[in-house]
Length: 278
Image (cartoon, rainbow, N blue to C red):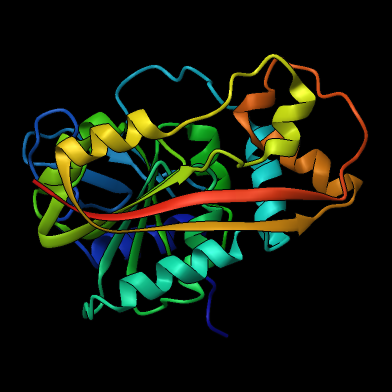
């Protein structure tokens, strides 16, 4: 009978298959896969965790988002709430005609988006990076053959020019690092909330100013050439269970009380931008 590999062994195999694409967050040298983790020529070493991820973040965890928020996100993604977004981005990547593209999800949280994308683009190589160890621990619990890494977007542990596509979904960006790790002709796909995104939650929180992404788009346009932009807006029906998960998954509701009746639906309003970095 064939012995099943542990999560750690599976992760080591995936990293080994792409030896040289990781770089040391301490000195910038290439990281090579060793028996239990990765190590650079300067002997800086990092173990792959038993759960199947590598921690290359040098700072102290600040705990901006807790494990409950990430579990709520998993629930919402399993319900298919963001499937139209996943399908759109999968189509955009296919249109580039990459051969086995390397796709980085920068700010992947608990990995749900990347897992759904894998269902569309199984031929691609995927790496999910997030600064939250809680998020990456949950991401590594998925069975899909995706690499996971705790790391800072301001110090991406990736070799220069190693990435075909960077996804930046409802997450902060670091355009200088994105430019460094993207290959020539590579694409950044950034997803921003539209003005009506989760408006039913915002209305029940009270005291929140109307949302605008103008400033974020302006900064992106300073750093990149926008190739195309698309708006995606639709309603999703919710029951109490899904509503509670959607409330818990958004940082808007942290330290705030949601009041009011249960809505019958929630608005998903997103702007998707594809760009090349300059």
